Length: 469
Ligand code: UD1
Ligand code: MG
Figure 1 (cartoon, protein in one colour):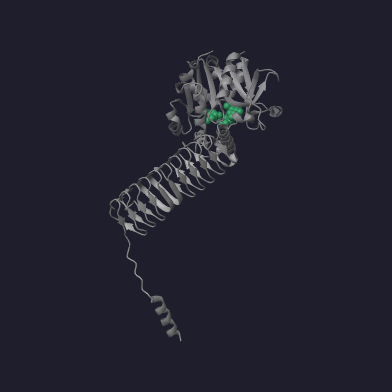
Figure 2: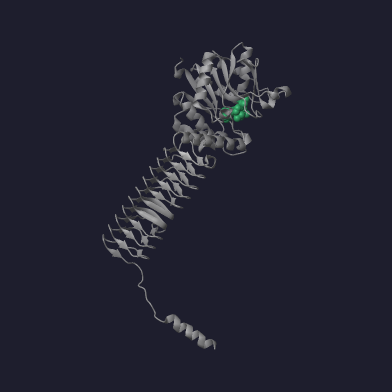
């Protein structure tokens, strides 16, 4: 077996994506919550180390580089972008020392590691100069067509682009996936012979097929078992189809690992999300970004969870919005809780309806069940926060911290003007405005004393009757 380091993977990602009609470069459009090119890089990274991956960038090169440089791949600059053949010409200097190249397209993101491996092995077994991964999708329109020497042969005579098809070639159902294996020596010995004599006036990598056949080199095709995997994204409609396919693939993977997803077609789960077994995801839930959800949780409908860490046994009732939060085991949230960045909810704690939290640490078993804003607060264990409580954390210039110690009881409709500390086991009376620290085990009453004017209404009523008669 050829060692892995003999292979390099080249990912073509320099094109503009004119057909998307978007300012953003095509390969940075997202499916499954990640840019197209990032999906291709992750598949490639399972086959060769990042040091053997070369991403060809050109259109808005810097934003593409920025988006994926954390992966440790190499970059090749293609400027201007004169076609896929030209892209490989630009990569020659950096990649020609590798014996074989696997060439992937940055806009064919559903490709799986297994399929790339099969292409590599087939290429080696066939001792081919060029091996083309092909498929027979329901609708081949728009793709380059692969012409075989005969219907039973592995050998290819040419690839013809959609715009260059002769009428009788339009019936050919086998398409070029834009994914290839090459012997680098043969590729680079011939690549300068490509011409741009075609409908798009570009140097097509696809023309290498006929060119190499003319040199008596072996050019073969391997048909992918599942054509869905090699679909490209050239328009926003195609992109939405790939997004749906990728998310369904993700849901299937999760379900295969013990997660129940009711009506998976209504859920939006990003590709890097992790969810533990025996968790239930109800319809119309979104789980995005780098989110981890433990086992035995229940995520009820219409909740949107991004970049958060949720431990085991957590219940999230309908309609919660949770962003960059950490939620400990057995906590109960919602319905309609809004957890903003920096919310850390303790074990078994309850956050109820219309409660907003931001930069809050809430201790074990504490509760804030109704209509409350908790911002910049340190809240201990066993605290009860009454309905309508507000931490007044902002004085117009600076943010200040509210500290509520273990076992404190915050009466309904308290406004806690930060910086302020409520001591261990202390109470605040309902309707209080608390501006000074409350010592442990004390009651703070911060409201005007109630006055009752007995008979006042009756007297007023009688006065009215007199004047009207
Ligand atoms: C290409 C193939 C076509 C195949 C299809 C599969 C060619 C000429 N045609 O067509 O046979 O069926 O993919 O999806 O290759 N790119 C560069 N530099 C360039 C031009 C493109 O890096 O100068 C990159 C693009 O960013 C993209 C990939 O190469 O990721 C393919 O380019 P694209 O313009 O999408 O080619 P298709 O028309 O889809
Ligand atoms: Mg394309």
